[in-house]
Each structure stands twice: as C-alpha cells, then as structure tokens.
Amino acid sequence: MEDVTKTRVEQLIDYIMKNCLWQFHSRNWDRKRQNENILGMTTRLLCGETVKPETPEDKCYWVDAVCLAEAYRDRHPWLATLGVDQIRDLMAKLHEQLDIQTITGSLNEELTDQHY
Image (cartoon, rainbow, N blue to C red; front, side, top):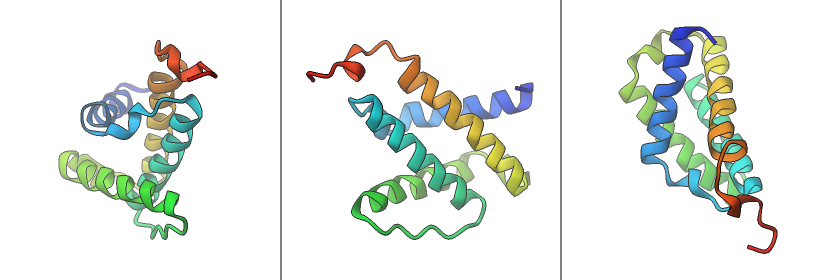
C-alpha cells in the first residue's frame, strides 16, 4: 500500500476506533457482518449512490453508515478530491485493515468462544 493511501486508511480507522461503538460486537461473525454492511453502505454513500435499507437490520447499518460518511466528509476534505474508483479502493483497504484489527488480529478470546 502506498504511503498516502496507508495514511488515509489509518486516519479513517482512527475515527472508527475512537468514535464507533459498533466495532465492539462480541462475536467474530457479528463483527464481520457489521464491517461488511456498514463499510459497504458508507462506500456507496461516499460514492454518491442512494442506499435504501429494506430490513430492520439494514436500517441499523444504514444509520451507522450515514453517520460515518458524514464524519468522514467533515473531517477529511481530501475525500472530495477522489474519484469513485479511488473511494472504492480506499474503502476496500479500510475494510481489510479493520477486519484485521477487530477480527483476525484481535486478542479477545471471547470472539471465538462458542460457549459465550
């Protein structure tokens, strides 16, 4: 990952780690699903697409995605200089890194405890 992209991904993850409680679900599958849905919807919103949540679960993810997209736009004006493909690429890298930090690289043993 190039330095500029790495720095930008770190900035975006930093916001999530400091401000988003959804990253603390207690199961791997919950974290995987939330990362996929919230970041997927956030990506679509940042790319100017309309997101229409259909299920109650989608609505929960959508609210978090709207808040995250607004916070990213407010705090990171450089997002406005990126094209749709660049935003998609950046958000894919963010998703990958967030999964590493919150799922595969997490030392929280409760994430994989089948009896919890």
